[in-house]
Amino acid sequence: MTGERRVVITGLGVVSPMGIGREALWDGLITGRSVIGPVQAFDASNLQSCLGGEVAPFKISQFVPKSLRKNAKVMARDIELAVVAAYEAVKDAGLKTRCLIDRGEVEGPPNVDPTRFGANIGAGLICTDLDELACAFSTAVDENGDFSLAKWGRGGMENLTPLWLLRSLPNMLACHVTIVQNAQAPSNTLTCGEASSHLAIGEAFRSIARGVADVCICGGAESKINPMAMVRAALLGRVDVGSDEKPESACRPFAADRAGTVCSEGGGLVTLEDLDHARQRGARIYAELVGFGASANTHSWSEPDPDGRGIARAIRSALSDAGVGASDIDLIVTFGTGVADQDASEAAAFADVFGPRLESIPAIATKGSLGTNGAGSGALDFAVGVMSMVQSTVVPSRNTEHAERRFGFRFVQGDPVDARIGHLLTVGYTLGGGQNAAIVVRRVEE
Picture 1 (cartoon, rainbow, N blue to C red):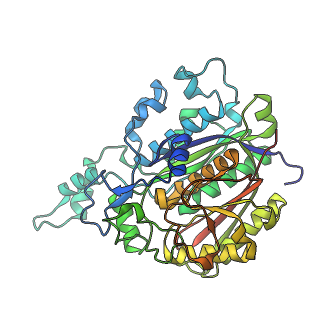
Picture 2: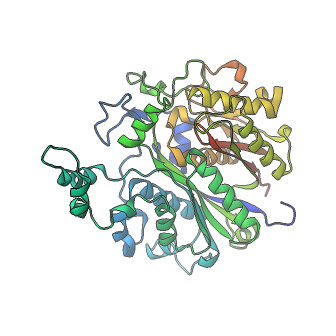
Picture 3: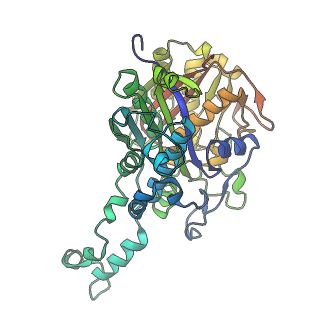
């Protein structure tokens, strides 16, 4: 990164089952709270597992200007989560955007040039409105009670609202966020599963470093609390199907008896900013993003590499980009989902990079409390890592008390632990196969 602009973190926008805002997430993890329980959004009693992590109901009108509230009619759940996270991110950063100005929450002109304000947002497979589809499909049934493509083409599809597809396009997260916040610089959507947040943050990092933008909102959001996502995860063998009677222990990252993850929802968008731009407007700076690395898993299209080679490559690339070594890392934020082969692959990667020193580095695993919410998971992990750095505190990692000793991770149980963190490393990867990413963050000394 020599000769390129320095990039700092000035805002953390979080919406999770712990609540809306970074404070809710932090307080929940500090106290070791679990948000996993029976799904309330729909009847999940016939699924292999009825457990999930749900965001409490909110009104999207509280997070958009009055003039844009009509846009909420074409916002799927994932889009709403992203819009809320973006609102929290710009507000936390002290930015004066169109949204906050129009809502009367800040005074004066914008303190960011809209043409230098970008967005990179990770998204997943948005579940369309199943009730709406079912009603339309019911009008295309033949005399035998079978679905008829001919009847569907002649008129069944006309029973869908004209804009129904706009609710389900992955790029609509970035679309709505940039409209609400008036962010006119380059905007990108990344659809790389659970790796999306890390990749989006990395892309924003690069954009600012090379001068394409001064400020970027980046991260990801997704809801896995819908029948399609939960059935898909169960069919792939990634869900703990035996813990419905004890939901608080359903997701056990790196544990010897780990049996899968729990579907969740939420997301995180963070505000990255050119250091000089942040200083000029007097922004509070959380930390500096100094390294990003990514790689592809070519072992299999559906299974992780048992040796974690792809993840290890991403970690080494991020360390090299940051100009630091494994010996400089003071905190590791793992991605641990509780899925047996995924956790083993990740642990192998860390062991390869860090060797025996791994046992001396504090580590965090959030999904024992939160579950896994796809494209938004990495951004939540990123936010937790940054807050840990700022607070000089390592939060406890729920359900890791029986983590396999051979993996070498040093998780905190019970009470949080004080720790001065100079550099942290966080990783994310697509479950099964595909993309890997790692990010290095450095403490900023005022």
